[in-house]
Length: 484
Image (cartoon, rainbow, N blue to C red; front, side, top):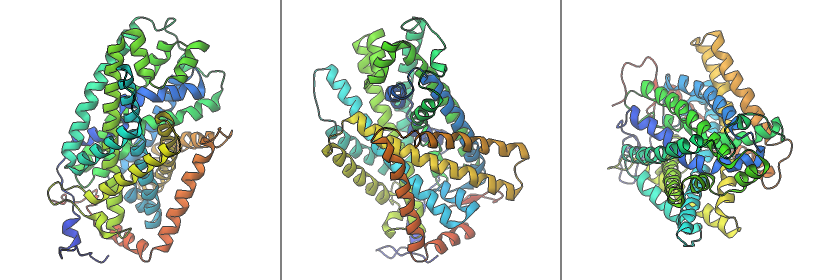
């Protein structure tokens, strides 16, 4: 691949090299921050209840199991490769450079759309907090402010942004666990039961449809793999961080969603209240503890959603950086900041796009909850497509390499079945508008990616050369040392 030149005449290889400054702690921090446990639990429960009624905890159990199965392939790939593009190299090594680019293209959209969504979610929680104080503010204003703050953090070093995000999340999670102990200790609204774990009157298909919001809560867990070129000993740190983040967060989700379901009550009145709540976690806190606890929850959820946005912009900017370095888009997108070692132009580009999306949604008349729900669903559907593709890539790669034993192939096969059913549930029965259009939006993005990979002269050849030559920071199992 030809070497690009910077405007100052500096070789592109020098200005597009990321530095290895983070370890296991920061890698896991990125995965946890992207998932945003507090922010996820502060709203996604009501979206789940609105879809499947009483079976809220069951939907999250299903999502947790499916994500654990998906994570297995990412963990195994992480032991073989370390690359800023994650699935870009994972899937590209299995099915070729065009498939690798297309996987990165879809994952880039998923990360970016979810980042925009959680910026809106942060604004929603701030709205809720200010409402407790009798102050009213249009959500679009804080959403734009949060985007600007996210840009400032992601522009800085990844070590700083990930540690800041995890510190924010840790405090918020601690507060929620106190609330869990209080609500469950009091027996919820009508005494504790197993109803949230049972299939309700809405049926199995509703549980599958509602699982999207479970996936939304896990969205981007694999984002830490994009730190492959910035992590010390990545083949050890990244797989362990991914596994730990999924396990701990999954247990937390199931516990908290169960607490919310029992807190509102599992009768028709309780389910209706749960489904219609814009801030269910805060509402439970207000009912069982008081307004001050609801205010703390809202602030914690706002901070968590903000931290998630920071993590998603970290991941999406690395993805954009990786594909631009191999020939997609303007050369400047692969530039690395001389001081902070961040892909700062890619970061700025994504934040500007996010600001435009937020303003457009507001002009269309959407409130914060609707804006988050719509963008979040689109982002998750795109993620599901990439997850399924990655499972097929894992089967092909590990079959050819002879690394896996026969029983290991059952894991990605099971993941494909569960993910496929979730996608199917979002197409049939046809959901109400606007959700019925979301799968087609994702499909249109995929078609655009296919057009790009065939239309851009030499793109496939450049990507293939990068894969073959092991350039761009890629680490392959068996290498004697890491790139310094």
